[in-house]
Length: 191
Image 1 (cartoon, one colour):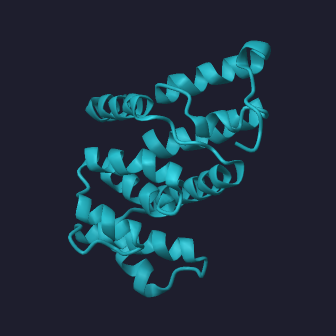
Image 2 (image 1 turned 90 degrees about the vertical axis):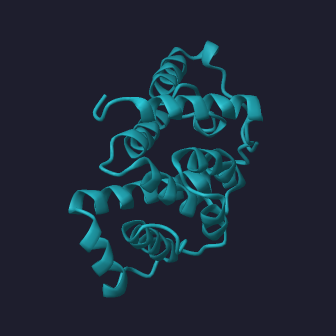
């Protein structure tokens, strides 16, 4: 870890922010803790992440596809989201394709268009008609915006995790995230 841990007990603003992050995610991950030296920044950044995870017009599988594609080269992100992707219904073979930077051919047509768009986004060369056409055929303007926001958030988070040397939590802590996500998936839409 590049920075020393911040102590929420010594900073009421940080303590409040950790409480807010925990309320939105079920816990405070090492990734979120890595932004603790700037509590206001943590609040803004985590709010974008919360929207991406729980406020978009995308399915759980689609959200995980975006996150996994963006985070495939970040061991911390992969350690969190590969199990979440499996839990959401992504197969191990599809995870293998994603990890290798390929669009899984066994996905539905809409999800393949999403994956192609995210890979194009990550390449930083813009989106041509061969990518934009299928994406627009399957997703509303809001959904395309949600895909883009989610990919941008996880690109920022992933590069920050790598730069700050954030360590992956042990399996018993990661189990908390799996259970939280399972419960969130069971909630009625809009809860």
